[in-house]
Image 1 (cartoon, rainbow, N blue to C red):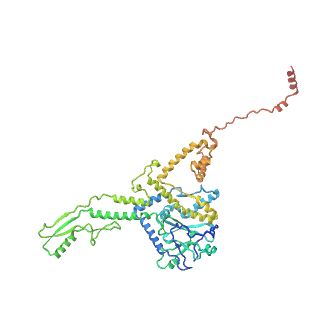
Image 2 (cartoon, rainbow, N blue to C red; image 1 turned 45 degrees about the vertical axis):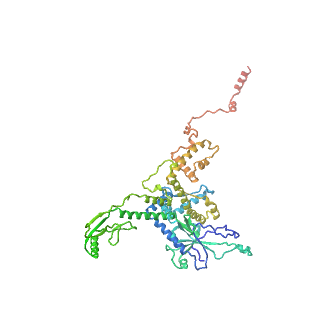
Image 3 (cartoon, rainbow, N blue to C red; image 1 turned 135 degrees about the vertical axis):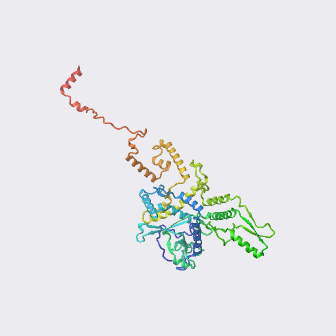
Amino acid sequence: MAKLFGFKIEDTEKQSASIVSPVPKNNEDGVDNYISSGFYGQYVDIEGAYRNEHELIKRYREMALHPEVDKAIEDVVNEAIVTDLYDSPVEVELSNLNASEGIKKKIREEFRYLKETMDFDKKSHEIFRNWYIDGRLYYLKVIDLKNPQEGIKDLRYIDPMKLKYIRQEKKENNDVNSRLRPEKQSVPNPQFDEYYLYTSKPNFPTGMITQAGKNAVKISKDSITYCTSGLVDRNKNRVLSYLQKAIKALNQLRMIEDSLVIYRLSRAPERRIFYIDVGNLPKIKAEQYLKEVMNRYRNKLVYNAQTGEIRDDRKFMSMMEDFWLPRREGGRGTEITTLPGGQNLGELADIEYFQKKLYRALGVPESRIGADSGFNLGRSSEILRDELGFAKFVGRLRKRFAAMFNDMLKTQLILKNIVTPEDWSQMEDHIQYDFLYDNQFAELKESEMLQNRLANLATIEPYIGKFYSTEYVRKRVLQQTDQEIEEIDMQIEDEIQKGILPNPAEVDPITGEPLPQEQDLGDVPTDEDPDASAAKITDAEYQKDTKTAEI
């Protein structure tokens, strides 16, 4: 097998050779397990699968151009990625991580560096939108192969149409069971090589598979950061997008809209019936005369279903044509009769139904269809069930999307020797990512939760220092993270120095009033030493006192 491009992170704790399983690892990436066939011959039969995947991504991108689908996608992306003037859309959360403050500080710095490399703060909306539409997202991690300890130098986006994930079975398989128990039937223990095939063209060339293998570049798995939607068609082993459920609903909406336009254009005007008197003309002459009169007065309007335009075209038949009928001599002569137009042209119930069906397929609440529909800023209990489900749906999208940051952070920390692969396997479950929230339901819920927390704080305050510590109250009752506690303490200290807040040392903890300033009372007289004063008594005074005492 040809040498892979990129790098590979080796795990020091390798799986024991005695662990044998006929079932390969669970496939969550929607890729087939291919059989190896030679050293440099046919690589992998990816032509058919990749062509289908290519067409599927093209369909998703075409769907995103539809106005209703685009509006629903924007609702999802705007709820998931909130851009603020001062805050980043996402920050790393390390409150549950059992590590030193130095390690946490380095993790925050490296995560900030990765975001700057991706330009995530500016392009977060586009990145999340591309991932949501395509159902997959790929980034190439560029490093200096001579100095890998410097970490990731660049993160480059790769079009999913140009990259294919391959899981290929190794040709030489070390069957442990056959060596240990040759007399018994061995259990197959397949081993797989995982890599990517990249081509600069948006699709692999048709023809021989060897041509696709020669023109494509093999990239190691660790060199690619990928994130999928998590939706996999198990029948075809293909990753799906969240737009997959809306394909049928969108097609139905398109057809009903086009048919409605055609019906209204054809039935809205009042058509006329022209009875032309042809006298005793022969049949051929009568038809010629009728066509001359028809071409003289008729209008030719043709509707284009793709562009929605109406053009005047006399070469094609139109559904808006008037009726021209010949009438022989002896009849009532030339006559014009008017047919009434269509009725109930203002009904849009079918259009509204398919719009709601499309929004339900996309997971967006139906109440967001109308542009003029507002929302009631009441209690969180008054929020519609659809909005609650939508908020949970956006939360799941964020968790799935955050897997991309986890992979980038893993590579960066291991390359810079900040953590080892063993340490990362224990830390990754405790590293979380905090996204900015702008959902109306989330805002109302957060406001009510803050009120409840402050009420609980007022209740538990007399017991602080007796049964509860200050740190416990801040983390458990107020739900403040370590980073928030650090930031709040720094802000309080800064405001005390600026005189905005009073110094706690100068405030009575019971009354909350400032302590009285100490006043200068002058020199306070002190008692003399009795022994020293006794030494100053003269002998005469001592004798006088003695005689007085005797009397």
